[in-house]
Amino acid sequence: MITPANFHVFSTTANTMIGQAYEETLEPVAEEISTEMPMSSEIMLFGWTGMLNQMRMWTGPRVTYEAGPQTYQLAALPFEFTLTLDRFRFDDDTYGIYYRQLVDMARQAKRWKGYQLRNLLENAYPWVGNFQNGLDGLPNFSTVHLINLYNSGLGTYCNDFTGGGQNIGGIQIGGTFGPTAFATLYEYMAVLKGEDNEVLNVTPNILMHPTQMKTEVDLVLKAQYFAPAAWGTITGQVGAADNVFKQFGVEPLENKLLKNVTRWYLLDTTKPMKPLTFGMRQAPIFVQRTNETDPVVFDEHQYVWGDWARGAAGWSFAWLMARSGT
Image (cartoon, rainbow, N blue to C red; front, side, top):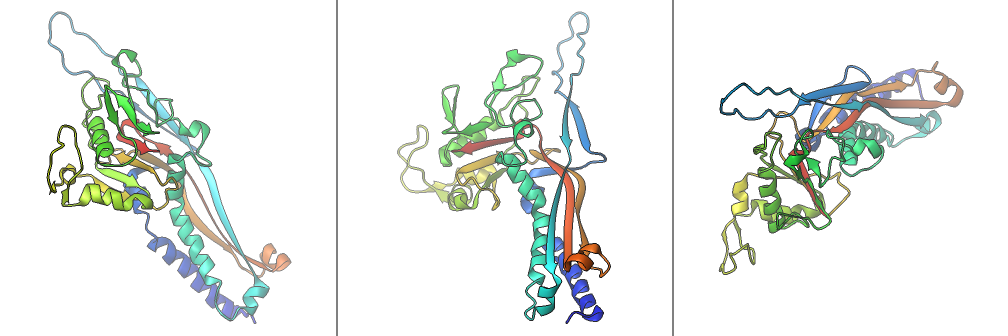
């Protein structure tokens, strides 16, 4: 039978378990691939200017340049989860089975950020439609990003190599994961140019993949020795040699939340801005309605625990990340 004393013990224990589960649940992938930005209002707007040209030889009058401002905005969306417990079932529970649900609620709240970043990457609800547009107004993963928004003559670059990869300059880049797909994509990203028509010094250092690709990714990136059947003009290698890919400094990052089991991502997380952003308006807050005078308890014999949060997953500079696979 529920008494004020034993329910106080349950409530105190439940709150402690919620707090511990939330703090102990790790989200290393979300922290690794995204820059969290605090939001002070419903809309977060941030701006930047394109890269300036290099110095020119001074012959004749100076040539002036005016910075072209660009902006990107995120709108915070509300999220919630509500857990109810019938007091009669709780009163008859002799096994303590309901504590587990509260722990799961806390863990799911901690994974909220990771889920939203995954949904943004995989074009899943609610990050569809305009949410898929990146900083230049195009879908973040595109084959025709302009190098310079104000000078189309500098051409375009690609960061979407799904569907078998892309043929760029006569070279097949990316595609289904393997040594050739990885090496060609790494080399392509490393020489991407900025608005000044010079290399951006993109340094891919993370290869994010689903669990189903772990064995192959680890083999390519971490094996001490490796002997592909053929590589470029090297077709006569006998036996294994030092794995040159291991020297690239690219670390595998297993993202167990990814649902597409054949798609992989190459990221540069060495810059001040990471490839993804997350606008945090309000981190998850937990509330309980378990007082005997709460209407839902008095009228419906229901104890209620709930959490809510506000935030938005968003993009960063498109050249910091490319996707490949099928």
